[in-house]
Image (cartoon, rainbow, N blue to C red; front, side, top):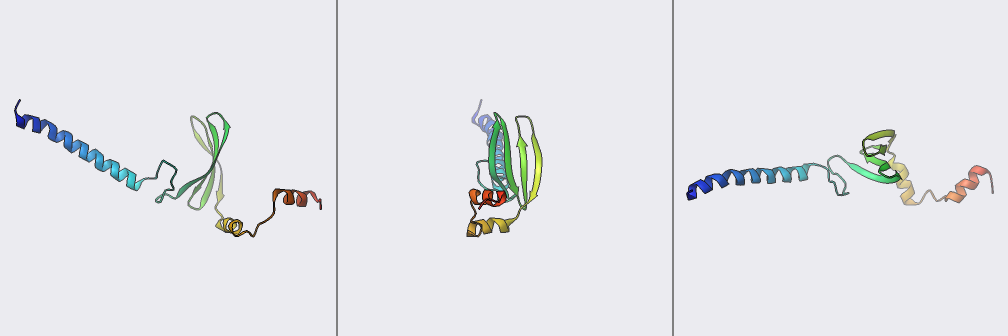
Amino acid sequence: MTFFDIIKALLPLILILGLLLFALIMVRRYSFSINGKKSKLLKIEVLNNHLIMPKKYLSVIRVQDKILLLGISENNITLLKEYDYNQSLETDIEQGEIKKTFLELLKQNLGIR
């Protein structure tokens, strides 16, 4: 086996590894992230996960201007409810305009003063 035979064998291997590296870079750049960061392209944000049973969750996810309530189990994902996203309520809560506690709301709804 000569030196040129070794180069002819390694050249396709190096070319394939380069193409795989390029594909990995493109997938990382233009797809959503898996490690909990917000997606810039799809605007997906996981707001909350709640464990119901082992391997069964309720998830609240915001996708652009919709909030989705999903039931997630080991074998499937089910859309339970879809809501419109109301950003004005979120800004009201952040600004402190809604200051009622749970106890105040309970007293108000029960008619207790």
